[in-house]
Length: 176
Image (cartoon, rainbow, N blue to C red):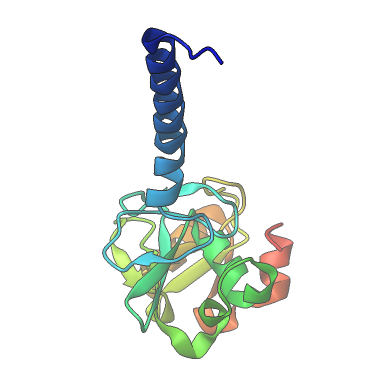
């Protein structure tokens, strides 16, 4: 039986090693980055919207979040995506624990004018205005009723609160 010369075996081993390294390198971003339907740490600056699948930057003007009692959060591309999830969480492929409202610590939107985070429970929302959000019809959150009334007076729409958001309203925006 003839054995391959040392150079050929060395090249073969090097080739296999290079292939394994490339394979591992290709898997690394997928295994180390946030998973598309998984929560991220509460202080994370990037995540994926479980509704539309897009990457979300917490610094974006339209970014919205649901924060959970275990120190994690789900990030959303827009208030409409968040409210689509909030009203019908069973439609989305996330851990069942994230679908339970009793596990929610805070629902956070950003004020349309200031882009500052506000608690959705205290926000005034304008819906069905003539203005579109980043992905079409959306909810426009405001920290004060006066600011919401000014926006609605100029752009049309109806003022509602988080407690008033229904599956039907979200569906009318084309989000459910």
